[in-house]
Image (cartoon, rainbow, N blue to C red; front, side):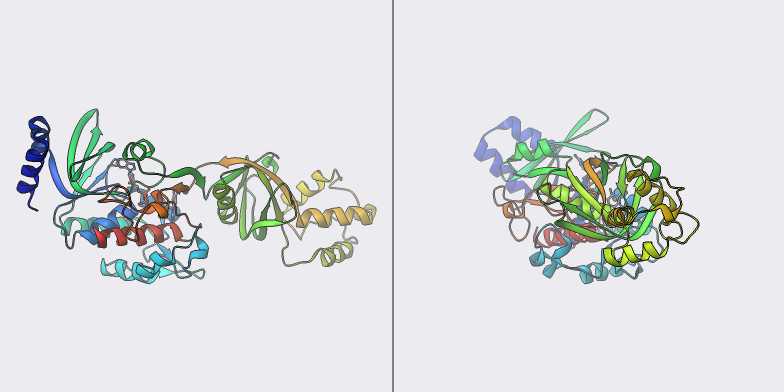
Length: 415
Ligand SMILES: Cc1cc2nc3c(=O)[nH]c(=O)nc-3n(C[C@H](O)[C@H](O)[C@H](O)COP(=O)(O)OP(=O)(O)OC[C@H]3O[C@@H](n4cnc5c(N)ncnc54)[C@H](O)[C@@H]3O)c2cc1C
């Protein structure tokens, strides 16, 4: 249907001259993508090969800005080890359509040279996220996609056979019309709009986030330990790990951070409850019995038994927790002391009480059950959802951006 016949239809059907006049004044697009982050840009670049009149609306000063802060400024684009186990649910159906290999091919086609590290994490060869934003910008301009930046979307209304999008910029309100709309706003920023549109969503919880602990971590603040195991347990079965992670932990002023902790935080986020116990095993490759033997063999050392074995700050914290004098002679350590030290090295307990610092993603969002295989709402036709706004969240390592590329591409192909 041409735009003219479409507007005439509205006029005839509604016989509402005022509405018709307002509509005529509005800038009109075939597709409006709300949110110019990772998934929004992917949608725009994919659909604009077929659809000519596409706009991205973003509240930021330029499209793709958020990508600059990803991967510590390096943008971890995806991961060569890709499957649903890295996500909160099975997304095989979607990865079959567009997986990590498709992402790499896509970025190569934009002229972005990429590389992977030993863990399979994929980055721009330049090691700077700016390169990703630059190739996006070139392609957006080449494909004549309208960029309406600095405009915050404050309302979306379903009317006739389309949507009216209301934006605000420096208190100036504007309205745009689109036949189809894509919601690609990331985390929890358009909760009211979702409610108004009648789109169901599960509550948003911060994920990939540091964990605040009840116990003080001041003495350990700034200490980084690697190759450790950290596991979360439920209150009912405190020694039964519900989720475990191996890798690096960074102690902060008020809690725990580092990649292993961020990944562990998904356990709390997905349970929608940030209260529970976590245990650190500083020596996961050494069994407790073997550790006791090792500690006993160190009793002849003149300095503290743990110095030269564990990080000094950790060693001090272990002695503090056991109320043992750090400077006591090793020969005074009883068998029970050695057992307690070994137990603490393998079960260093913290009580998590809340998320801490900035989260990388939100868990929660529009459930995939509310959407078709093409990520179109089953209840609001011509409305599509992609990226973090869907109830899909992954671990660190490029998995969240991969979902943004996957979902953005699927929406772009099906608009
Ligand atoms: C610090 C940090 C580092 C990260 N590093 C990585 C990484 O290296 N690898 C990885 O896989 N994942 C990483 N993530 C997660 C990843 O960035 C997100 O999963 C991904 O960006 C989600 O894409 P999206 O398109 O859904 O949303 P976003 O990229 O968040 O984009 C949403 C866009 O919508 C716009 N917007 C929101 N509300 C409105 C509104 N009302 N009106 C207009 N515009 C609006 C925003 O301005 C934004 O540009 C990181 C996240 C953070 C915070």
